[in-house]
Amino acid sequence: MSFSTFGLHPDLLRGVADLGYVKPTPIQDDAIPPGLAGRDVLACAMTGSGKTAAFLLPILQHLLDKPRGTTRALVLAPTRELAAQILESFEALARHTQLTGAAVFGGVAMGPQEKAFRNGVDVLVATPGRLLDHFQYPYAQLDGIEFLVLDEADRMLDMGFLPDIRRVLKHLPEQPRQTFFFSATLPPPIVALSREMLKSPAALNIERAAAPATGITQAIYPVREDLKPWLLLDMLQRGEIKSVLVFTRTKHRANRLAEFLERHGIACDRIHGNRSQTQRTEALARFKDGRNRVLVATDIAARGIDVEALSHVVNFDVPNLPEDYIHRVGRTARVDLTGDAFTFVSPQEQDELAAIERAVGKRLPRLTLEGFDYEHKPQERFEIPIAERIAAIRARKAEERARAREKAERKAQRPAGPSQQPNEPQPRAGQPHGQKGAGAAKGRGQQRPPARPGQPQGDVNPWPNAGRAARGTRRQGGPRPAAPRAAAPVRDPQMSPVDDRIAQINPAERASQIASTFNPNRFNRFRR
Image 1 (cartoon, rainbow, N blue to C red):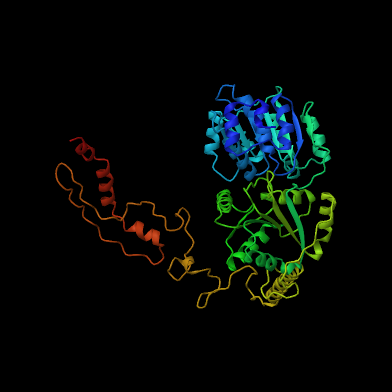
Image 2: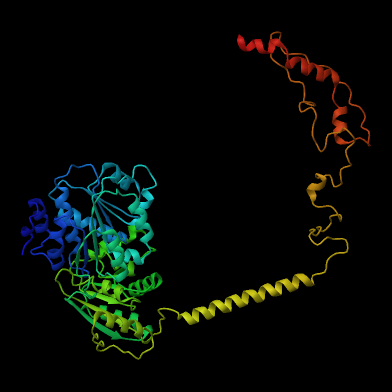
């Protein structure tokens, strides 16, 4: 069977041919007909089976005959990488049509995304969190939605997006719409939720046990935890691995592993949640075009990374869940290709490996790397064991508590002065007891006597302009002659500084200043 048998528009068939698709995959063969018929679809498909085209092609076929300017299809994805990948697939399939699309996710500016809302692109691919951020503003209106897609629905629910999904649904119209549920795994709770949202769906492979793609060669490499980075380095240095995606359990281990490989001359990059969207996009671009042959990632990249002809996937750490293992190894052997998936297993990870083997339904082969010394003790430590780190933290905390006790004891043993209060600062050398600083006497070396009744407090001048030399004021008759200054009275030693300045004021001079201030001729000169 070929894609032409589905009755797709010729422009869509041209886009399919440009992508190199010759015949539909099993999930495409099962999902496209009910999608074209307008039925809801609930499908479980292994990673790399082509499920993105399985829901995009029916939606694009329906949108071709509708007017532009209204967003009619919404695709929800759990991660930014998966949203970007879906948008790339849409742009490739709709290349020869007038359909438009945009991606809405965090880590980038909201301006272009707001423009997509206002312009009404035909297909909107979004992560739930950023979509809810836009719903706070009046421009984010999705009243014309007719198609809803939940891709990797189980992952969104596992990541705690269920409340966000329900909030998103409240912003969508209640009119009948066509809904697609696609995921690599569909555990029973997800199936139960889908039944609440879907109406008489076409259920595809929901009873099938989750398993990796058939073209993946899986193998287990038993190795000590401290030898894992050296085993990976030996594999890379032999040149047999063309491109490899390495998965670690945590972001910090991803950073340490990338730095370890770079120190030993391996071109690599890393991608995880602590990296900005720009850094993640650039790292993925360098890996796809071959500039870096190694990409170290956490499980955030297990959903949404589509690298053409990826030869190897290495599980540096055994994943905690079998579903995560299936998604990790599914990055290789995509769309009927082949690839290798290696898992490094330490003695402490045997339980997780047993759960994976039960999920895939077989015992995975154990291999060893010929020529690698599994007994040597590396001089360079890749990571400090958790028990040693906890012991160091406890020792540091105990040392801090001991220092605090010693400081408290020294403070308690310090004798206090006979007349000094506990919180009163010590007087400086040469400073009289009771004087609280040089500024207390305003630089005069003595305390100021108390103010008399009715006397202003402090150094406040009751007449700010008093004591100034009489200045000539330009008036119509020339400068005003200076008034004769009376002799300054003899200062009484018992008078305060303020009384002294008041006594120095010449009453006749002050009266002349006041009269000149309100002289009409002073203001008439501005009129001239």
